[in-house]
Amino acid sequence: MSGHRESPGRELLHTHHTHKHTGKKYRSTLVESGKYRSTLVESGKYRSTLVESGKYRSTSVEPGKYRSTSVEPGKYRSTSVESGKYRSTSVESGKYRCASVESGKYRSTSVEPGKYRSTSVEPGKYRSTSVESGKYRSTSVESGKYRCASVESGKYRSTSVEPGKYRSTSVEPGKYRSTSVESGKYRSTSVESGKYRSTSVESGKYRSTSVESGKYRSTSVESGKYRSTSVESGKYRSTSVESGKYRSTSVESGKYRCTSVESGKYRSTSVESGKYRSTSVESGKYRSRSVESGKYRSTSVESGKYRCASVESGKYRSTSVESGKYRSTSVESVKYRSTSVESGKYRSTSVESGKYRSTSVESGKYRSTSVESGKYRSTSVESGKKGKDLPHQ
Image 1: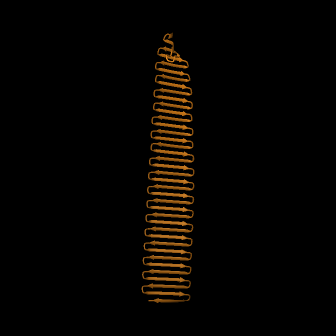
Image 2: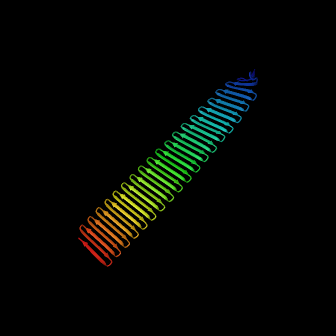
């Protein structure tokens, strides 16, 4: 061991040693000046340096391709490591921490100042970033065409996923939630806020929308020429369907119901409210109407030259039929009955009221009349120019 002093207050000491196990020789250099100390150890390609000055400390190691450096001045610390393609850096100052790692295509960065934390990882085509600050958290991942991002701040949450053509986004701030998904021609959106919910789906020509708010519900579906709409609010319900020439509408509110169907030349309408019912059907030349309210009933049918009408109210009944030259009318009310038939030149009338009966027939030049009331009977027949009266008592 040998040493010499270069100047007052500064000491330089060189020593040469042989390792007792490996037998390798190494050189050690020590420099000391007041609070300053420096130590250098060198053995072949290996070098190590230690510097210390008050609160300051620095360490450097360099064995071949490997390099490591550490600096610590007071509350500040810095460490750097390098080995071939590998590099690592770490910095620490009070609550602040930063770490960076790089190895070939791999990169990682971490930052943590106080409540703030940030981490980034990038191995080749893969990237991951994470940030945290108090209640705030953010995470981002990217790999080729795949992307995923997540954000959380207190009650707020947001998630976004995008792998290739697929995209998904979810947002949740407090009581509000929103989710969106997109994949090629497919799109889906969902929104929820308290009692409110809304869902929308779109795939090519297909579209669907659903809304719900408390007692209110609405659903709409559209696929090419097909359309369907449904609305419900408390006791109110409405449904509408449309497909090409076909249309259907249904409305219900309490005791009220209304249904309407239309398909080409066909139309049908039905209304019901309490004791009231009404039905209407129309198909080309065919028409039918039916009305019912309590004891009242009315039916009407029309098809080309054919017409039929029927009315019933309590004990009253009336029927009317018309087909070309044929006409028939029938009326019935308690003890009263009346029937009338007409076909071309033929006419027939019959009346019955209690004990009274009357019958009249007319066909061309032929006429016949018959009356009966109690014990009274009268018959009259007329054919051509001759006529006969045959009273009976």
